[in-house]
Length: 205
Image (cartoon, rainbow, N blue to C red; front, side, top):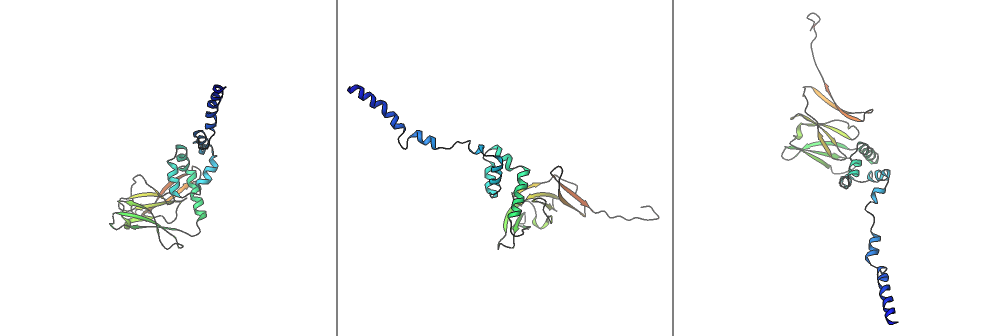
């Protein structure tokens, strides 16, 4: 009888140990699944990310490939820019200024409701006293012109991303504008040139 009782006790101990508080088995059950975020609908992820600051979105893009594809898509960029414009209570102005060494250009965002200006980004090797900004943005994108290079830049003030456009043939007395094709959803930079000539009724020129 003594041997049977000891065997029963030994068989019961492992079962009670697995159910004891703080056991490894219970800790494993409390750990959430690593695929829980992947089960969320895309619409819910989009709504959540639209309410996040730019710094958080940049960090989330490095989480996985699917999030990077969604947050870097053109559709999400348009939705984010539209929401930012809707939530802004005061108008904002973009302006450029040369840095202390005059070898780069700082781009600022200012608002009448704030006492200080916000530094968005800095363009290296671009002279601030020769940089122009388009008067009105196009879906959150602004066109910058460097008169020294010469070169055009497309800037997104929301994401603080800047892209230098391919080289072009610079023409005197010319300007350019940024537009969006509603059918193809593509952005285009259209140069506008002013040509002056003399016409003679007798010479035909």
